[in-house]
Length: 104
Image 1: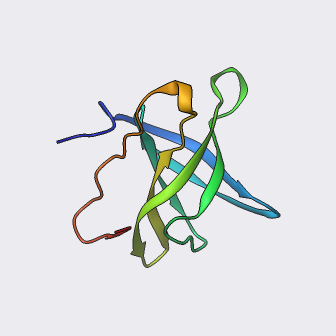
Image 2: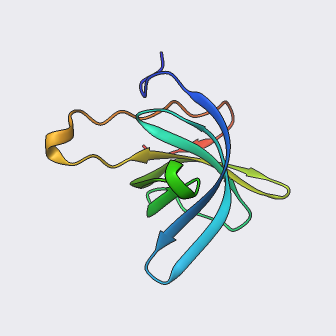
């Protein structure tokens, strides 16, 4: 069952920012509940980032929390659940791929 709604395949640049740290990579798919990205630098489960997807008029900026990671030889594929404000409705988390580590 998909918890984050329908996923839309994308191939957009992505920036993840937390404090003084900025990671760059690619968004692979996005849903209303979160985004799947690939980055070269390591991330940790539970880490929270400001996520910028795309550029120009099509830029999406949201906060998100790392909910699953999958280590690859050239980086990490990870799922980030968008962090919603109290008035934006229930939080949904996209399911992790097989073989990935998830938060309890």
